Length: 341
Image 1 (tube, one colour):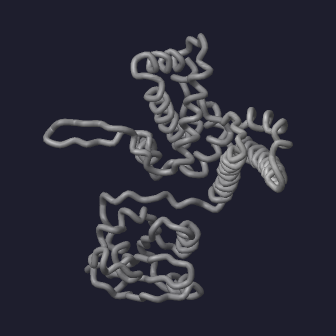
Image 2 (cartoon, one colour; image 1 turned 120 degrees about the horizontal axis):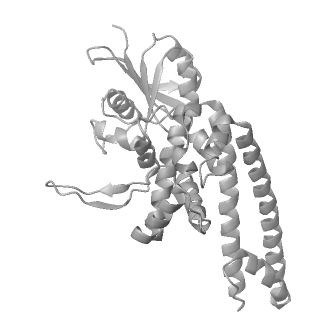
Image 3 (cartoon, one colour; image 1 turned 90 degrees about the vertical axis):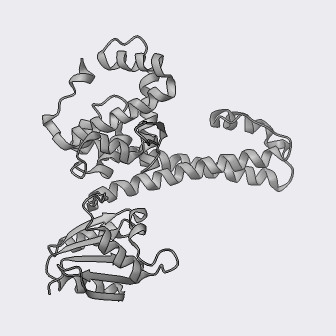
């Protein structure tokens, strides 16, 4: 019988493949497929549904399998675990492949959008830049901790630290002075790299039509617009903007039972980098409200008065996530009437 569904457990060198026919009977069980043989194996099979976990290399394999006519869907690993028949004690590659094969056929399953190569190129820029930012933060924390061992305590703000540390360098004994100098020099190199990546990301955003449309939204600059386009693509995997806000983790968690609805804190699910960009954009909106009297500014100001600063920040970030989905989904047909009034 023909294979209609395949589950593939991805790895670096050895993959597990589990295929079933239209009766749900396993007809292709290959617990150990070398990396060099995987593509040729899938290419020999008639077009069918292929499920994989959204992990390292998943988008690359999805693009390759699509070229051979297959329909590929990616699943978050946490949604696959309940379908593993052997449970935690029986976890192995073959069991994972069978669980993926079962999970991908569930009608209510939620899938991860397959990213194209150009999206991953932009995300590589963002991930590299974010890595440098985190390294710089860790470096300044390390520097502050080291000099405190010699009785030098400086403000947490980086600008104040860099301005005041020069006057204390001579107070550091022996090799400590050399170490602090090397750390400061490394911080300068990181600053230069981050600035270069900022310019590259901004240039890529200006050259992309979808990013330019997103930058018309309040609180969304080149970095946020570029990250949203790279992450959401055309937004076709989402039925509405609410799903996007939930996917990013900007909606309250729900603890409802017995007909009583209880909403808690935001879920903070999804990509923390994307969520942080939207939150920082929302904070920038509130910081720049001033005396503006357009419709959006009046709404944001009243939101702060009614619900407080941080709830307003999250609400604005969630609103921007929804608007971003609409801009990407409908393109030129979407008009920002509410923001322009």
